[in-house]
Image 1 (cartoon, rainbow, N blue to C red):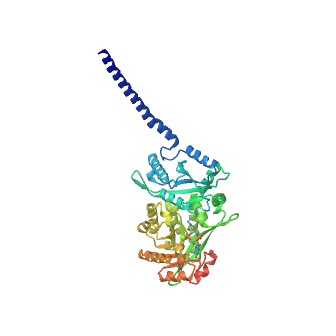
Image 2: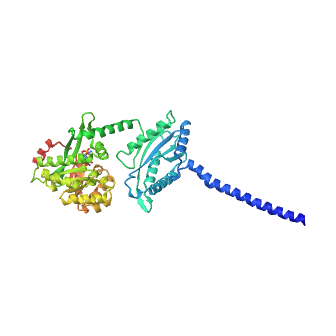
Length: 465
Ligand code: C2E
Ligand code: MG
């Protein structure tokens, strides 16, 4: 009996011991899985984006470079981030970062890695042993990534759009180090961000020269007005059915003593970036109105069209400034046309609406420039009322090339239905002229009639009217 009791208590004791041991193992397992593993994972994986930590990424990339494995190194920057209201809070920004990381993770091909760098910059590399000259499908791959990352995001129940600039450099398996490669990718990114959105640029030696030139332009542009380096040319516009002169478009020119003639498409985006466009634009407006009053005072009805930038629409004072230029020069408001590109309306439609109404109330005419060249949103046409729409020259140049020509024809019909005047830019051939007349385009300007001219060359055109 005594023996039996001892055996029972021994079994009970070993049962308790086993339970305690199992519990300890369970706790240890739980600790390892949830605490230690997350800590270890945290050293490798960035908590917000789910991508590699920067140090891990750098280590992997250095190893690939050490083994001379050819690859692409790419930096991504999320553009226009600051202007997105929905992303004002840190938690909303983190949510965006998380979603971007997720999209990148899902997209990354084999032999590739990505990490978040700083702010809204990401770096990634893709191993690629195919020589760069032979890998034609690479651009499709970058395009795919760009499209994927630019698709709309839902952040805290709000839809938000971001655009992505990409700079990349190719490592061919040569002597370069990580420290040399990364600045190259950033140079390419800097270039990608200069004028456009959703742009991809691949590094090449000349980029450094281009960036140096841009820096010089930034410096020199600040003195251009004071040093009388800016001037205007005027391109005549004609009515197509009657052949009569209707007016001129003012086009800005810059001749710098060292850099020579710098095209407006190069320096105007820089002037916009460094906030010089407001003073330059006011100078252009004043000079254009003065010029028209000098060569064609009232009762002439000839018009002057002036290109304005998005920054003018954001300037609260702009409508009043235009009115005081008209008052000072004595030009009738109906003789001034302001040309706005679609891209300038992209981020400020409501504000633009309010500013443009004020200008229209003064009697100034508004023209939608470069229609069809980029964003072509019906939203502008519904919300804002334009007196005239200018068809981008690429559509005029497509005349004679079917089926693109049919698109131009449909566009003309569409604008007619909006009851707007329509003007074609870039008219160069008789074939284009005949087509435009047949399709009831109202006005045109282009090298077929005349290149942009200096003020001194205009009076004979006016006398011929
Ligand atoms: P835009 O407003 O679309 O001006 C028309 C451009 O087409 C001008 O280029 C003009 O010279 C060119 N053009 C006219 N007819 C023909 C043609 O038959 N064939 C070809 N190939 N081109 C033709 P430009 O003068 O180089 O100006 C380029 C752009 O710079 C302008 O495009 C406008 O967006 C901008 N710009 C020019 N002046 C100003 C300005 O005072 N302020 C602002 N904000 N932008 C300006
Ligand atoms: Mg224009």
